[in-house]
Amino acid sequence: MQVITTVSAFRQTRAAFDTLGFVPTMGYLHEGHLSLIRQARAECPAVAVSIFVNPTQFGPREDFERYPRDMDRDLAMLEREAVDLVFAPTRAEMYPEGYGTYVVLPAADEVLEGAARPGHFRGVATVVCKLLNIVQPTRVYFGQKDAQQTVVVRQMVRDLNIPTTIVVLPTVREADGLAMSSRNTYLTPEERQVAPAIYRGLRAAKERYLAGERNAEALRQAVIAVLDAEPLLRPEYVSVADPITLRELERVGEQGALVSLAVRLGSVRLIDNVVLGASL
Ligand code: PAF
Image (tube, rainbow, N blue to C red; front, top):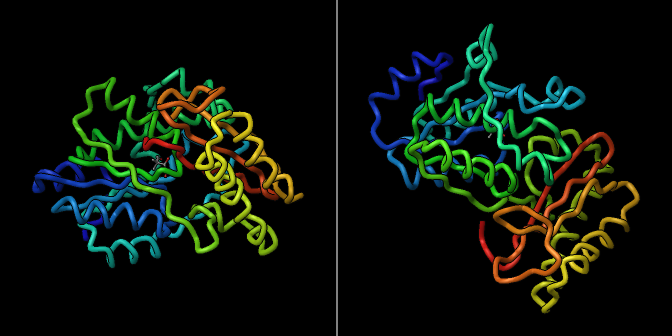
């Protein structure tokens, strides 16, 4: 496994590989990342992983400074997965003095995570665009947990004619249903006990949908009823939206729906989602 920290060295090394699968990450790896890496391994002869906590996708009052980092642990995990290339640039390598170009998808800022976290998707789209230019992967892998991120990246890749295939894989969950996330490490033991209610709420909407409910507000209320039973959980939004445009729905039709939410649990902000009747 080669660990590379500069763009020029990565480009040189990448030239020796033909088909390349790529998993972009911010490190502090968990089973969710490993499922993406294993799928890349199964589909591509060589696999690259990036580790970079991207400052431009964090707001000024968000957790950039305290975001968990453990490069040694991450590299040991990647070694065990037989990853070929690791790209772990510094902040100065990605955003050198005088850096001034950003990728903006204005529609993304109007809904869901984009509305809740101004500037977040500008940072995500910019860094993913840069990483795709540097790594030049044949296939790039993302998790369904960051549903809006997958929509944003698909649109950017289409609009900017970036020659790669996007693969989105299901959310990996703990045994009690909590979606795996590097931010779960922030939870106190008491908060960790409450956290599975997030997925229970989403499941409640899914069950109502499978029983025939198509009214979006009724599905939303099914989620909220479960969340409200846990006083420590403070919902930021619960959305029942079109899975492609991410616009709120009144009724769920042929296109299905993305039921997604963000909650605060103590000092931690968590997101999760389920898809009804269609796949993204
Ligand atoms: O999903 C993430 O971990 C990040 O948003 C990504 C895609 C690595 C960009 O920083």
